[in-house]
Length: 304
Length: 249
Image (cartoon, rainbow over all chains, first blue to last red; front, side):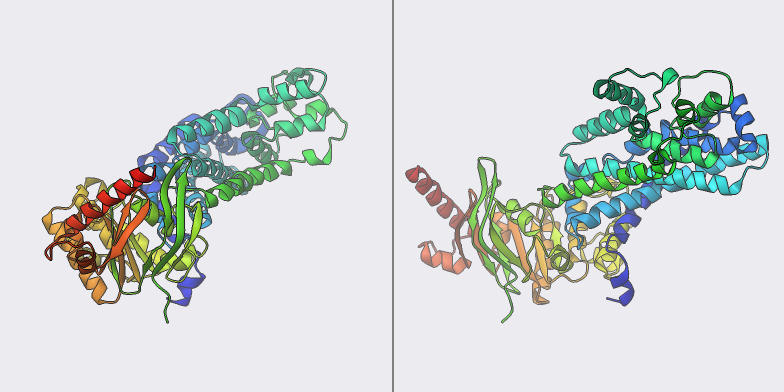
């Protein structure tokens, strides 16, 4: 064996094969097309708030709701699918630890999804340049990188669940019922419910409490954390809602059903932990913790 | 003295109330061709699954090429070629990609063309495995097990889905690997195939090793005719163990 082979991570060929498989199948590219169609949403308020950088806002829209469905759909079978078909026996028979297998799967699939997602962002960028003029390239790259981190996080969560379930149906139930519906789509409602149960008063976005803990609870959702981070980059406000809704809430007289730190705290200083960088921290926690817990079980379980 | 290729001590696997493997003690020496025989459900695949770290044992120990198969996985698998039972290939990948993937992971520069020539599948090298018949998949998996010149070849039911040419091919591969000094451990319920290639035979029945030896040992000890086949030995032994099993109940 050459010295090159020994310094190279063991999981690299597995990751390469996973990425190849993604890039050669139709699913990720179909997702890319849908993302462009879904995310191109010019709005008057968006233009007022961002000018030509509205185009970068489209990338955030691409990253919301549709992207998580697509990424989870293309990842939840990554291990349990091979386990039920029997192809996992080949992977398990190779000189790889079970941790290597998890890491190779997550990195390979993330790369395989990053390429079509980036392509969708570039197409949105080109359409944006033609329609609205040149945007800040640095901002575009920043939001795209945040989006790719979000993709990797979702792949990691789906792979973690895939590694510890024994049937694809169960994996699908946990991934879509738990991660997607509870933590992504309906999280605001759940957060309101939890806050009302634990605390005293019920909350609505029209009289949001100036309570740091409530806002911290809201941004535990990976989707909201992603938007807190990208809204910060876009400079529209400290909120987990879509950039155009945040602009409407904070920069127009229209009252709208959206939580934003600025409107709840009205001049008071919000707690330091509500800094927008918390969005990045939450994403990193989702990236590492579920996979770490799954690894613990995956290493010890019977897989055939 | 070199360590045995495979050594198990009281290896046991239970699934709830079911005992799939009950205190297996076997030793397979380096360079030996060991045939692991038994009907379906006897515990053959359970044993191989434990040796390959697919599953964890309930109790007992094992050493594979001197390594602990559950903690020294990388060192172990670097030196093993495995043809699993009831596997599935990757439908959208070509035979070449399958082999390249194994070679890359093992850090081997084996040529997929040469490997597929050995198993008579070279003309299908760039076809996706999803188009393969069961026999072709079996040949591909055999080629994958040969990547990187393993010290130990584990073949779980290698004759599954093969036509007579394929069966002869597996026998030839086992012979030529054995001549190179490779240890071969394989399981089968197709009894007739086994005596042609094995140095030693272990007979597994209901999760227990009921007997072990060379074919001539068995003929002598069991008082069978000189031309008795593995089949005769097998029927004789499993009948007996079935009977004693009933008596002790």
